[in-house]
Length: 167
Image (tube, rainbow, N blue to C red):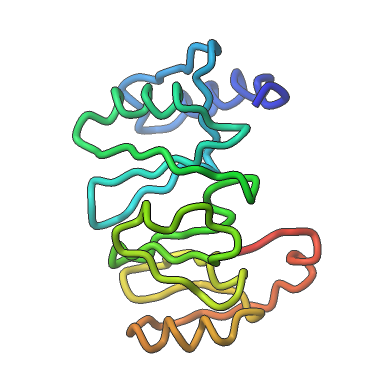
C-alpha cells in the first residue's frame, strides 16, 4: 500500500544486515504489482501459496509471486470482507485451511477447508506440528482443534481483540 512505501529502505537495510543474507531481493514494480504480507498464506505441507486479492494485493502481484515461486501454485483468493486474507483464514500444520465462514468470500478455493465456529478461532499460530497458539475467546474452536489431535496454548488477549488484534 502506498503509505507503507517509506518502510522499504529500512526493511532492505535490515534484511541485508542479516548474518545469512538473502541471495537477492525482488521488488514489485509499483505499476500495479502489490502484495501485503497479511494477504500471503503458505500451506506447510503443500506447494500452495494463497494470496488475498484485496485493496492491498493485486492480481499483478500474484502473477509476480508466481514467477518468483515457480515450484509453487500461487492462487489468488477474493478477499472483500476483511482487510487481509489472514484475517479470515489460517493454514494448520497438516495443510487444512480453517476459516470463519461469515468472513470468507469463497471457501471452495481451499481444497481442505474447515469452518470454525468463532472468528477468533480462525487466528492461530502454529508453534510446531502438533501445537497451536490461540485466543481464549474461541472455546468451541479449541474443542474442534483438540478433537483434531492438536495440543493448545490458549491465551487471553481480550484487550487486543477489542482493538481488532489477534494472536
